[in-house]
Length: 109
Image (cartoon, rainbow, N blue to C red; front, side, top):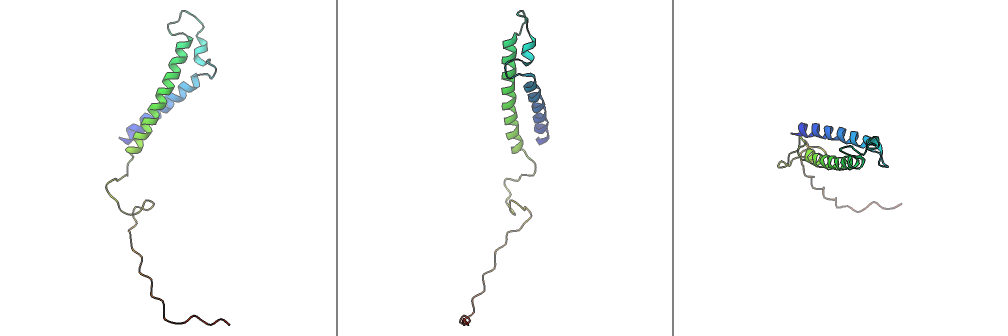
């Protein structure tokens, strides 16, 4: 499942990069090449389509990344052993400190 989600993330990233490169920040880009008024999709509709598709792909990328983190391999939710940094570590207890000897401190010279 993780591999499928990773492939989908890659596809969405490529499409998002393509759509962002086609757009122009001043409303030009691909939409500027359509000068005819008789087009089925005019300049404004092309810009709207590119903007909506970029937002949709960005939301899809966010959802896919969250899903990928949920299905990441090697995560055991029910099993708790070791530490977070070293899963093979065994929890041990520290030995009790030795009692202090009953003698007076050394004199200061």
